[in-house]
Image (tube, rainbow, N blue to C red; front, side, top):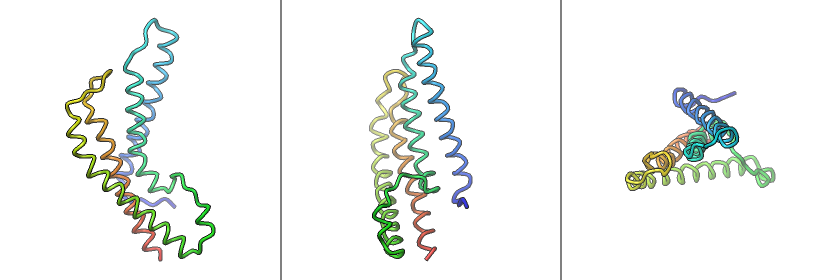
Length: 155
């Protein structure tokens, strides 16, 4: 059963991740086709593909926490008792919340610092790129915090 934490946020993030993935694929295909079929290849495609990839990962990380679809090595967990396993999972979630909250708060000044920088090919302000760190910190800490509370309630 899928748990719906924040239905509108879930839909919005899913849409943005899907859009970013589709745009990245389209841009890479354009670059490959242009490289072999046209006399010139746009120089902005590599940069836009990188930006799309960064945002796809940053926005999708919170959704991965929600659905428990992240990569985990559970070799150690198999040898623990159910109580110890739950305790370790709660500790890991608490550390994720802590790390991502710290990342969120420390990334905000960084976004302000890089406002004067522009991306070389597209001319975007680099604060747009560094904002992905803030988004990742916010959404992962939000979803991990919710996951932590749910596991705590499960008793």
